[in-house]
Length: 368
Length: 219
Image (cartoon, rainbow over all chains, first blue to last red; front, side, top):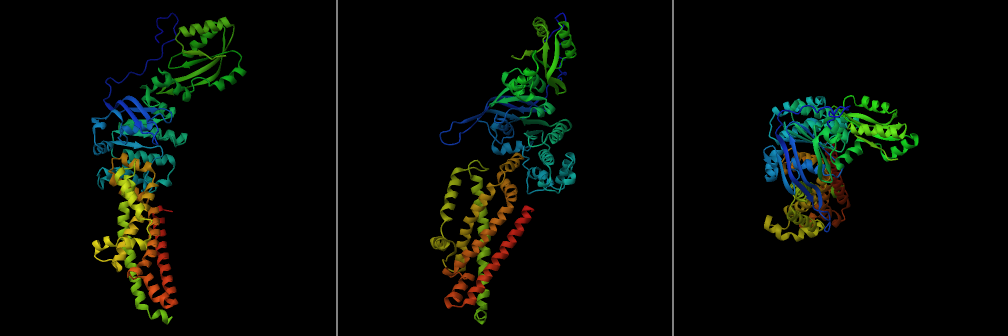
């Protein structure tokens, strides 16, 4: 919303960080991908899991796919390494058209793709080192090169001293770090993370996310991360796709999609997790405590935004109390909302709100 | 005691025959059963090498053979036996039948234990680009090793039990000895000592099985 033409403008949102000069090459591409599972039982209707999905994931980025459980996220990620095959459409990974390859061909492609799982899926019959060595054995890497690589990977994830332990002796976070080391063993160019932090507590989640970030930045590996947790997207993703009932309803940079959703479905998803408006229950409580008019203002990356907001209220002699809200960060830029209780003559409040709207402030008045 | 000692050489021979029948049956039945069990597991719809036709055929075959009592089974496969080893009586005939019977029992056991392995682990192996046969041998069997050893121990005892019926077909062994030299001659010391011997063999086998399984399970 450019406000420069207005006499007393609220500055427009700060410009986004300059995009890279030339976009990186596409690493994974979905073209009109559909996936339908036959219904269980003889008369059951087939179950459409993915419907006309189009995606482009570029080399070196962290691409988040977010959606509620049952939205088709897990199926989508399994189409990338060919553990599932699409019913319709095409999936390209690098130079390969997975849909045109035989199972043998897909196996070759898989060796260049690591995968990390929600439940870790470590081999219980093998030691930590044995787990990391497995993909190397599959790829035909011989001793002593194999041992060297295992040691380097375990060192990278900080578990070198646990090499000879078995997975059940480790904590959840340590298990996931072994899972990441195993996924990186064959030096893949692409890492798939299927709800990789959903079984972990918040502190361990941040550790594992930091490790994934490091994998992306230091090793240049493209990461596709599937999650239902907005915090995961907020802390690591560059690009996001919102999946809703098997359809990609919105894609773009994490900031654009989460802070400025264009579609109702995406906005609805963001709202349920980001809480940018008080819930009806909260609103009812606020009402009993605050008799004034309640308005909710969306906070984005506007410089000096709150000073100007306060000035509008002052100009019209409207008292404004913050009664609800919060501001956090996505991709290092602020995003959040504040709910104000406005008290003052009705006409003054209306005038202030009218001017704020004219300034391009995104605000809604909560229904009485 | 002299009632027993008089038959000492036959007793020794009987122990040897029992070990011969049981060990060959366990090895041959174990290998065949493992192979059949892997086929059952892998070809099951939705699994690594899903193949409905193969799965149904093997599944029905196993279901047909397994409930047949051993005495009837050994009679029923006489034509096959004649074709394969040229005789229908004696130690080798009994061993042949027992190997087959054990194979079918073991196949079910292998299938069931592999089914308890977390499918997520199989998926993790698939995601590394491993071949299905590689996954069966290097992931599924090691992951299910503890229960597989315990199941195999169970089959060992069943095989010792079935081997006692070998006498009916001139197969020799401890069961034959206990009946021919023991109960049919009212020579009770022979019966009791033979029974005690079988108990010792079974206990030793169970002990060894438990020990190996504990090592595999690291408990």
